[in-house]
Image: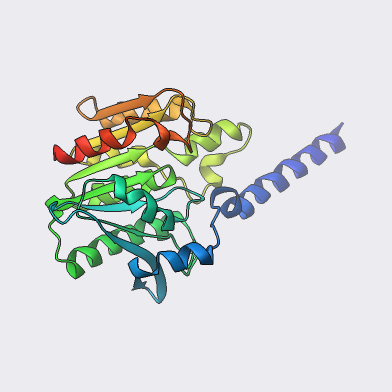
Length: 261
């Protein structure tokens, strides 16, 4: 019996170690660049150098009559090159986006620290290089990017914040998936959006999907409660985590929010 319990303890400790060591691969899914798509969007390419690493992205010019600029932060497995297609739906002057470290042609390794810190540096560089006013910047974050966008909006002045399929924290999500493990002590990348949302002083629009197969409703509601009732919240039926943009009111609602800022 003692030997059996020792065996179980060893297995448990091995599993904890494996979760700690392998968590980067369980959390981040960096896409490789699709050269044909990158060539098509080459005219919009921009690059910033941050701490000897290159952040590769795109600046998409849109409506010159608008004074608004979108800073977009993508989802976990998203190559934001495809914002070049989607950006035409937004009634703004321009949309600016960068792939995370290790994503696409951006160098470096993804981590909570690198994503959060790079968001602040990108904001500062974009404001300076393109002579933008904080009142003209709308930050949009989708899925994992909703945490990055919230962190940025809590630490820099922006006009508004738009969160697409957001969540309270990866820690809370992982704690439900790995119930028998001390997730709080093993996790290096908690991405705790809920810790920063209350520090955002500007208007927030949250758009969620009823059929979201990745974000549980409790993880959405936790965030919503902390964000406060004064912020705009929409949950669309018949769409999921990766199809929410297909809802007929999706772009209309985003543009209405932007026009009201």
